[in-house]
Length: 524
Image (cartoon, rainbow, N blue to C red; front, side, top):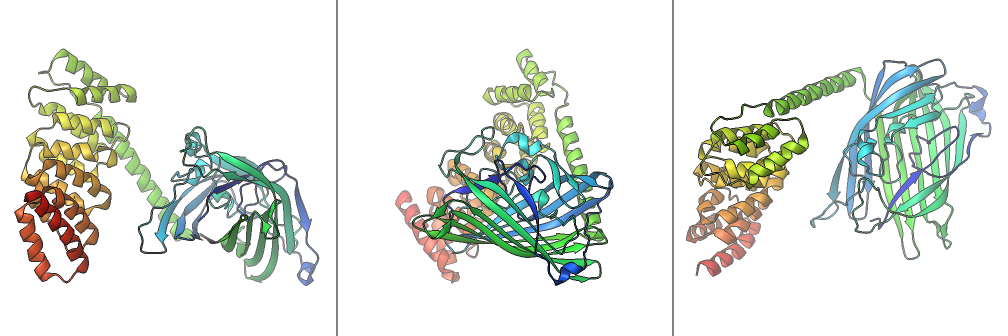
């Protein structure tokens, strides 16, 4: 596994990046378009151009697979281009998209995926992980041969793979050669692997920056109808070397690109890389594959429909949040409480948070369902900015009559509000409320908080917890036994003995043995 992270950036007079090479470079550099030696194919020039026009939309399904020493990571998603301007010589595109990361351990041992400083859902946030970058519009201006004139924003990917926005905008030969290449000077920055968490405003720590050289070669190897096959090879190496072993950091790759002459765009590409890090004591090689395929008309229409539905959902949620902030202030409350609720009903987030904090610190003399309903409405609106404060306030103001609504909220509330909503439910000691919390032992993300609250609740939760016992569900079983070790009684011992007689699951018996021992030690 890499002990350190790497990034690259650059500034170029004619091209800002080499999109196929997928690297991020920095520092001054010189870019040269170098014509390759003539070959037998060169006798017949083959002009290739991007034919993107204003108003068109293109989308690619991207998949990146990385094989590390202890785990595999897959980054997959859709990258989208909207053509915002075009003339005979150039065009501009607005880029958007995201890649979801899934990690899988290569062994059966528990595995925690590595933390990454630029862990935004969208790579369009940029390498630095800055909050501003996440909202910055990402646009490119290019000529018809894929040469980038200007870039606004960033879409940097991990593993030195460059900009997501430029993966499918490969450079073409302005002179219609069948073989062409590029070469440029650049640099690679090593990001510190220290445990200090970088600030979103400050960005990562740069340990050192090394000079590097990058080359890319392209060769047209075939044509079938409108589809032109291009073979590509890449080399990216630091100037610094480790003894006679080679460059300190090296990325090499080969791949095949299919370019559609009729559409004037890349139809698909498949690339294989090997990223190598050398030190005085070791050499690590990381295989990486990248595949990208243009969505057809039907797939694009489906994507657009999904985006439209997502926008409609977002608009509905926004409306719901706005409605949750509009409520009638009850008449039967004192002046101080009226002032708090007045602030809660504004659009000012800071005032709303302050009002909710005051409600969470209050000590109401009696139940007031008018206030608890207001708080439930805020939680139902899924307003992320106040969910934690609203749930804490609900733990103070909830009533027994609110149990059905609170159970519904518990199923949807995010991790910031889960614990307090559980507390709001459990304080009323209703069977349905305890069961609702106990059922969360089946949900991996919510089980930890549920276990904690059920243990605090005590033996009164024992029946509800025993109902979740399933000898064939190992993860659920671990959560159930975690609680029973602390609150279980003779009833739990009897239930465990019954299951032990009928199950052949060795994992259950192993877990059960330690649980029985803990319960007996506590009960006796």
